[in-house]
Length: 411
Ligand code: PLP
Image (cartoon, rainbow, N blue to C red):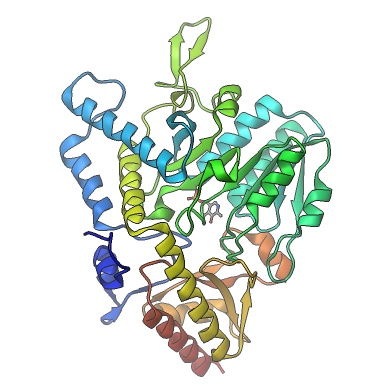
């Protein structure tokens, strides 16, 4: 559908077949679990289907028609990603299995090349486990140290502490752009500036920002940036690792296998050029093509329009939740994305979640793979409603109705 004109929510929703679903006794599905994964527009579904049914063939290796078509589409997808995040070169875009795959790749590769015993890596207190555990594993391997930037009770990082944490042992900073739990939009531009002033590279976890805000890696000046296809309306099992060429040239490959090599003998193997050096084995080429279709789709709608619409929905939701009363919201940073973590006072999240589910409202319950955030607030977890550009104010109203229903039943 053509989305080049005004923001037409009905038209947008019609692009997502899953949103038409009815669940339990014909209840409309209210999908507010977009932080976990996003739904797929028809454009993506059709492209993935078409490549499986008409053009499936192993890329980079065949000389026949299908292989040629699939290879071209895969490399075109790389160009689409490059353009979407405004990377300088196509060679700086590596396809991975997702954010987790990308971070593990950096932790291994950067760790092998640059870290020695006693060196330090800085992350923040609001990271997803995917941006904690790979670094801890590296610390165990290399006897390096993990340092943490704390956040205050509104979910705002303390930049003064951040600056003080940096020492001449600090080798890398790895922070989330937007917290998957608190919704905080971190001042990554400023954090990168501070890091670079000290000669330290920065990795940005864009798993929760790529779908909400325009990202320009050259303007941000980040050294690495990672995200997942499934959180930006694309397929699962595909993701992106962006790295400045100067770093990628220095880093050793993460995995060995087909396609990442130049010459292989039993004595020695030389590696392929960028980006293939980091893409061992048969990659998820159809996933990459599907993800590119998703990026094209949201680009046509316009990231600015998406951000403005979601910001309006967030404000509406915050007001409505405030009026509901008896609700504690976790994460009230002034710069906040449309992710709402909350608890209904005196009611266990599982009880609330169960009623929500029966009413057709899909939210996430638990620690959202960010246990340190829960430890900060001394809670077990939260309910999390994460809102996308296809959600509506009526759906927020319905969420509030579900909250009232829970309160009626449990108090
Ligand atoms: N980082 C953040 C901020 C996330 O929200 C997530 C997923 O929720 C991840 C990393 C991990 O993403 P994936 O499971 O797609 O690898």
